[in-house]
Length: 174
Length: 154
Image 1 (spheres, rainbow over the protein chains, first blue to last red):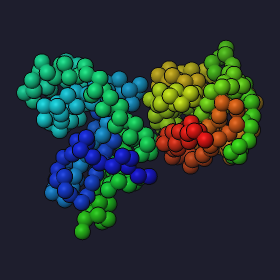
Image 2 (cartoon, each protein chain N blue to C red; image 1 turned 90 degrees about the vertical axis):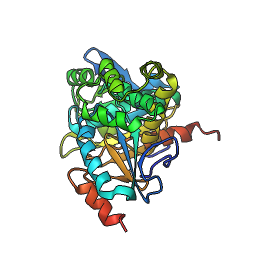
Image 3 (tube, rainbow over the protein chains, first blue to last red; image 1 turned 90 degrees about the horizontal axis):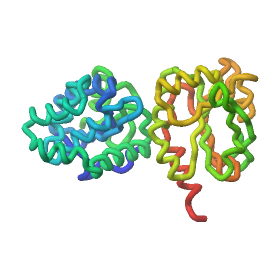
Image 4 (cartoon, helix red, strand yellow; image 1 turned 180 degrees about the horizontal axis):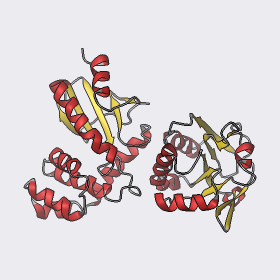
């Protein structure tokens, strides 16, 4: 199963944009499994350094995780102020506190322009961007979260512990 | 599984303890039949949760989703409320698995439906089918591809 569409400049990319190893995660900010995967991805990023580009796409299951959509929109709003990844991190590190007031608190911690942030989180463009991520996930064969793609191919094995890192090292790190 | 191009057999099953749904009521709409082994088991939960988020994508194609397992109507009611599902779950409960058998997706060895999908067109003809290994959530990309193909001008 392949990634549709491929990584583009509408994606949030962390790491070296020219890296040959591409890791894409479809995730939900309120999903506990994604919370568990968060430090694992960090470790992969540390280990691979400039050999890796990491992309996060939203896949909120809104009926199961009623706060996931708002959290995703908050990260996109932070992204408009150049702080997508900072918000992404803070949200995953505080998965149990994703109310509107909590999200505003994180925006303050990140020293965002709060007036702009509170307007941006109501904008339909950001909701649509999250919905487009979701749809691309469906088209790519995402069936739950987190789902990872390595260099465009769906990764179906275990991502726990060092399993995914070892897979990447064995197959992609030349 | 029943072959593509054949007529989907009609059935009437309980959607709630006091309401039955039959396939022929949906003439004029596309139907996605999702047979799954059991309420509450982890993979089906995810599969149904995923489809629950996708109803608006299905509706765009004039398609309705129906879940079917051998669980009883009361079990479905509880499962559906817990997962906040917005589509019907039908109880293939008595005689057990009769509809699944008719659609050739019954697993006699465990007494549950296999994990199988059918897409049926507005005239009641099967246009796509898919059988998934029981432990694997088939996702929805195959369904969407089938619906798009059906809507493509001939």
